[in-house]
Image (cartoon, rainbow, N blue to C red; front, top):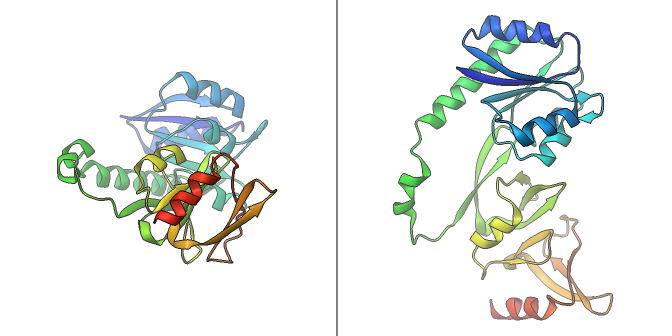
Length: 251
């Protein structure tokens, strides 16, 4: 049975649920939510289900605020009257973006996409079965998200990781931006310390793309990257400055 949550403040949401039940007979709507606050409260206490259908604009804010506060790792299907939020939607776990009023053919396509993705991942072995094979093997790649795609990136091509609004972004040497599925702290623990350095709470940098550094506010350091088109000011604190110098001179 498909377990779904619907987030929509419009009156026609009941019509949407009726369409959903008509198309997908074996479905259980766990809850219908109508605001950011109500949704955060719900997801803090109760199971998410299998999929979430969510209107982008709610009376008390954008739906994105929910997923910035609650780490939800199931597929999302966004719904809106406007296309201006589409790119933002795919920065999350969106598998589709439907324009309202949602038609039955559009909903059928979205559900078909969900089933194909579910079938794909069902046939992959669990991580526990792969662990013995990977033990002791040096990590050279990382899977990141760009829109609907899962992209394999070589670690040596990654210039930096940074966090913004609780989302971790990756920038590669061509200047392309991706989303990481792990928090910065976990990445810091997994990455090769000879290649990557946690410059501060916001940034992890790759030594191969560090041009140099210079004093900043007398006691701090400003790191300069080789890529001038990557406009990020990376500051190393006074406390971490000696450690940074040791790292940069030893690699």
